[in-house]
View 1: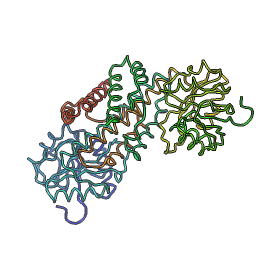
View 2: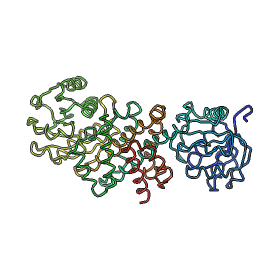
View 3: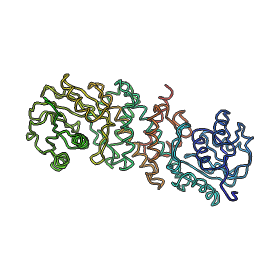
View 4: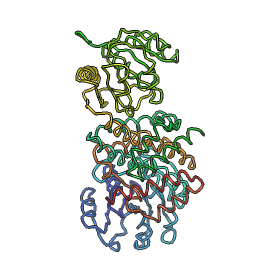
Length: 261
Length: 261
């Protein structure tokens, strides 16, 4: 499929991940052929940045690219793949939780390029720091996926769909749920009149600590020994917000249980 | 109390915070008189580092210092303060959740120096980045506390005990509970055979994002729209661990509720 030189890529999707991935590939000299998005603004915006053409109807995707990357929401992935015109090439998706085999009815050569990171449209990320998890429908598909991945990052792992699901679940805890605890902290700190920004060094240090210590060892706070005196006082403070109270109770218990293990 | 020049300090406690605070003050030229800890090894270890004497019996604390800093666990603070020999000077504690008035029966001049950060004994921290929250039993006590705090950090706030309790509670979410989510992620990722270290760039980026965006805006993941399809699949994956399953369910609901607000 790829005869000498680098593969060319078309993107299905123009969201946060598609944007960052297309930009990173473009900056590495990979030719981006086309950007498809139902939202015209998103499609043209990204297409302009990576010198590609854009389209808003899936039937207008051309056959020109070597690789077609579906970087779209999990909820619409299967539907969009089913509507994709049949273009020979390698079809990839970038989802942590969706199986590789959803491509099976449509194409022979397919695979996964799952970057373990959180993306924003505007904040550029350094792909060379991002672990990439790959899977391929056959050796050749995996090789081509690896060839593309290597351009982006040295941190490359082969992982099957079942294990990738667990990896993605661990990332939900480390990223989505962690961010929500920041939101709760930001909500609670309003009681003090002090700005949320005073918590930023603590948030930063908490994340830095586990770069060196296992999180189980880095754990501090009253829940380690389930110090009822302090825990009950803090539960009482949250009595007007039963949801936060329950989160406090459950996480404190869980800290205690994990430390005892 | 402090006649020209800097105050001298005695520490009651030799744990993580006492260690880092004593080291930081010592490095700024503040004279550390004595380190008290019931554990002889901890007392002498820290005392050696900061050129102080050490003692393991509270009655052997001398009257020499201008400031006595109680940097000990919340659970023993009141008991240790009650056993402290009466030495005139400024008595401070460093706890986020304990009221200032626990000193009232014993001394006239007392206050709070609460650094909003997590400390390890071995990992040095840059105090100039740490927000310090102060309180004083009277103007003079607050002034002296501020004088000491200014040596350490430009980020200084006056905050009463009631508000400090809320600040501390928000820190429990941003630090203790966040670290526990890292532990859960580390536990779950074992299923994949991939090392926990692959999550570190994600953890780092999640913490970095909220340095620029409010956490409510930075939130991503299936819970934002309460995407039942994905959420139910992930709940099913956790069926052998009801505690993690309940944490997943509760945090997903809470994300959804907060985004709707």
